[in-house]
Length: 411
Image (cartoon, rainbow, N blue to C red; front, top):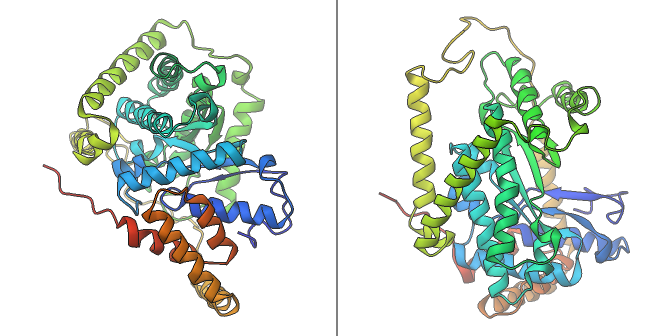
């Protein structure tokens, strides 16, 4: 983290980190780096994704079981509210749910229900809802069905405002805001005829803007083949800039509001979303639903039905199951050699040789004791970071107490 932000004042930038199971540790490394720069934590702003529920549902990069993982997130909420008040503590992510094969309605419902679960746990942990809810944000996938994606974002804002007001009694208007970052759908990109992806991304980006996203990431055309080249990244950026500066669509808030079709679709998505809420509430909440495999099965079924529709050509993907080219021209892709791996291993070896390893062991032991008790884990994690304990060592210390999650087999 020190190397990454060398020469960059952390109190003068915002940083977004897509990290989940080890979010507390990586965030602590960021905070200590800022501390060494002389920055005040109260001046720091940025986001950690820190959305562990969607890991069990879709992305599967968890470490610990759900309940201790939720404890860590609540410790982050408490710590951030008191010490880093401008930080966005959870970016509740539907993107990975959609990428795993869900429908738009499932993405909407499971994402917002995950958000409800975090708020419920925060309130149970003794936090005032208006003290932490304004720092929650959302992350949605934008797929190919143009009007469906617009309606999805419109429905998300309506549902979240009502939930916060009616279910949690939030009084701060900022607690009602569904602040959205969107990313065009990586899963919609094809290795076949990759330049078609430029068109897909442009359509998806336009849908996100018309749907009212506050932040946007446009994918690169070659991401199905490798990490993107500089040229393809530039083209993805230009796609956003053309929409922003040439199209005129950002000049009006909710430009499709009042459209019979869009309003009807928004209402249908909201009603379907509330049906999912009802089923999950009847199970006892999202953690209980995850433990029963409910959202996982729903996504698997949706993904299977989509694959069948492709096989039958009920759903057309240009260049994949229709309009296919027998021979495609070669494409230059980005290649990264193994020297980076060896360089990083050498740096890690040097770090371990040069630090105070007795201090490291003492800090890791304190972290284990805290995990075995009820103390907030952020303070011992910060001490481990100051001693230059590694990410893996801290995760192992927590693993020794919490165990490691193994997903059960569901019927």
